[in-house]
Structure formats: structure tokens, C-alpha cells
Image (cartoon, rainbow, N blue to C red; front, side):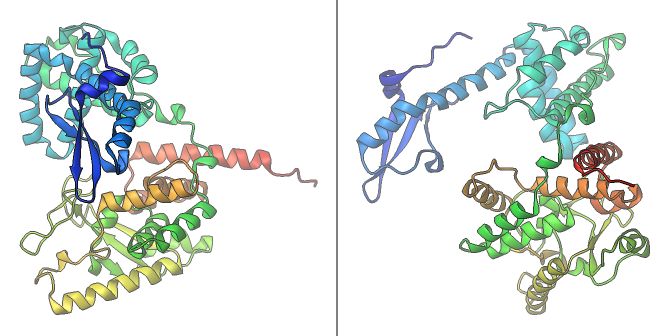
Length: 427
């Protein structure tokens, strides 16, 4: 695809300014993707009080937006291949119906990375030959492929792309769109070897407390500060944290979990029972209920697939008890209806707002934003250092075997670094 991205004054031909109340202006530009004018988010551009300021900003920055759109068009150029598009559309319908939980991610990885690599990069339009290019695929994912922000792909993302391709080719083999002998699964990267995680990548207590303080001092930040604290001490995923129902909190804990932690000097104040999570990223009540789905890596919602998370710290217990008390009062009033499942410990919080507060705190500290999932990484690695039993880690954190092995690997590296840095003892 040959397209010249305009620069400098040439950009102004694609520019339109929008004036709204108070004499303020926002920037709009003619999009390559839609052929219509698209407004630049005020979060990215800021608000302009004059035409001149808005025009000057566009002259300098608008090209970056057009370049990203052009790159998106290039990635989607494979859609000119009618047969591949037909196969992909058929696979999409099957995937959404048969495997709805993984469909969105799988199809996104395929359309943005997997298929464009073979059609646009290698010019290989016959899926029967794709299996011959496993090494080229790994090299491209490792050195060339970029995220929307222009960053190198994480090993986990590269593996998701490889898995999505394997799923697609396996489906085509089953449908006899490719010959049986031509299906050769692509090999994934070994995350334990590729990942460079060390002790420096964990959230230190100093950074954790600093971010907690910043979020607490923000307007309406107490709720999100409590979430940050609980996520660090309990290792929840964000979706799990947002979906915690108030009656899941208990002052009891199974004996086999107590036997794992109490001999290490850790007191257990209570536990949280976790059976499901919200089905959608944005939480809303419909007819007094919240749509829920099974936990990650679980097939269905059931007691057998549930997890029990111990509360190992007094401050965490206090936060949860306080949140529990608030929801008990709302439940007594039946404010959200007669269904208990509609009353959440962190009621009113939304995923995007929570993550945005965290990123703002990181920026304020002058640190690269690590999101909130890094809290789960930190706790998982700490438990690996403590050599917590695998069965307990599986029940509490919900990791698959590969993930547990990866964290044990990180923990081993950290223990080795600490041993090397420790002063020599004389006997």
C-alpha cells in the first residue's frame, strides 16, 4: 500500500477545528480509516483557547495520529484476499458461538497480527504452507511486530498470537480447508526463559505505599485506594476485585490454608470466597442483578471451581470489614433490589477509572506505569520465595501450572540474587 503521510502545512488540509462553549477549541481531522472527521481526545491534546494554539498543536502532532491509522490500514490489507476473509468470517461466527469467552481476544490477535504476517509480510496466501514458517513467525513477533503504542510485544502477547493461529489452522483442518498433513502447530516462546523479571520489577513497599497515599488524597479516591491495598495483599485480578460480593467475606478459613501460612508467622484474620466474576468490563445492574461468568481458567460457576483467599494482614481485614458494613446497610434497605449478588464490596468502582488513577499516581512519582496486575505478580513471586505449597497457590491465586512454574522460576532467580548479594559468613 503506497500512501504518503502529509507533513507540516499539508496536514492542515485534513484539519477542522471545533468551537464550543467558553471560546474553547478542539481538534478534528479527516480519518484514513472512516473517511470522516474524527475528534482528538482532549486528554491527548488538551483544551485550546484560540484557533492559533489548536492549529499549531495540529501542525506538530497530528501526523502521529495519521501514521497510526496508516499502520492499522496496512495490518488490515489482508482483507483484500477474498478467500481468507471468507474463512476468517466463518471461523469468527463459530468461535463466538462455541467459545465466547476467548473469542474477542483470539479474533483480535488473528486479524491484527497472525493473518497480516502471512498475507502482508510473507505474501503467503495459501494456509497449507503456513506451517513451514514457524521460525520466521517467532522472529517477526520478537523483533518487528509492535503494539499500537509502538512498543515491542511482550512474550505473553506473542504467545497469544501463536495460539490464535494454531486454533485457526486446527479449525481449518477440521473443516478440510487445509490438508490434514499440512497442519503443524507453531511453537510458543518459553516465558520462563524469555522473561527478564527480577526483584527490581516487583512493587516495593515504598512505591506501594506512595501510590496508595496519592490515590487516597485524590477527590473521591478513598474507594480506589482501598482497592489498591486489597489487590496488593490478596492478589486478585481487577475483574475479580470489582466483582467481590459482600457476603463472600468470612472470619473463618479452611484448616489446610491455615496450616500453610501460620507456621510461617502469618496470622489469618479471615477469608474471601470467590466463585465468579462480572461478565463485562463495565459493571451495571440490569433488573437488580449483575451478569456474571466463571473465573479465569474455570469452565463454569460452581463450588468446585471456587477459590478461597486468606486475609493475612490486619489493615486489609479492617478495610474489608468497613466495606462489608456499608453493603450490609444497603442490603437491609434493599436499595439495589432483593438479590444479594447485586451488592458489591467495592460498589461504584469501574475498571477504567481505577486503572487511570493508578497510572496518574505512577506519573506523579516519575515512574513508568505498571498498572495494577503487577501487584498480583509481586504477591505470586513472594509466595514462590516463601515456597508456598502448589495446591494452596492454585486454590488461592487461580494460576495454571505453567504460571505457577514461571513464578517459582522468578522466585528462584531472586533467591539466588539475594544469596549472592548477602555478606559472607565465617564459621
